[in-house]
Length: 197
Image 1 (tube, rainbow, N blue to C red):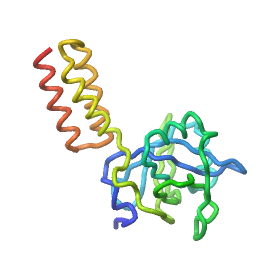
Image 2: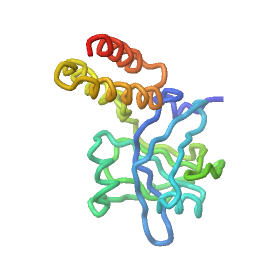
Image 3: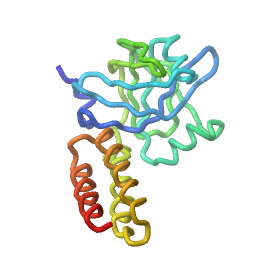
């Protein structure tokens, strides 16, 4: 059964979010890619060694913060002292850390956390929700499509380097937005550029 609180997420697409959790007295935060396969749970592949992963492992919960500006992902990764935190005000997730002024968040409880070599595979269910996710959730496919569109006009200048970059863009888009119009369009651009170079 699907969870209506995940209705704005397309199955199989990877969305870039900031995950917050608590480890002892410290709030941890980091940018992560999350997806839903079934519309009922969220999944992620988290690299071992992440302080946020360790907080999730210790507590069994975390908060997904839907940011509406990619710069928020940069701050969460590189300038964490620039983050301002608030707390879930009530309910089962009361006290859990959230980013202040975030458009929407989901409080999540871990269902499973499985070892997959360099990463841990996470599966979680929604406990609580606040706000409405931004109408344009952050997915890397859109930006890569725009870059691919420009790159496709540079074949004469860049030669096979343009083709190689377009191939990489197709690979990433197929991963983060499988079956999307972005994937189809970049595959078309690649075929066109391969014929011109």
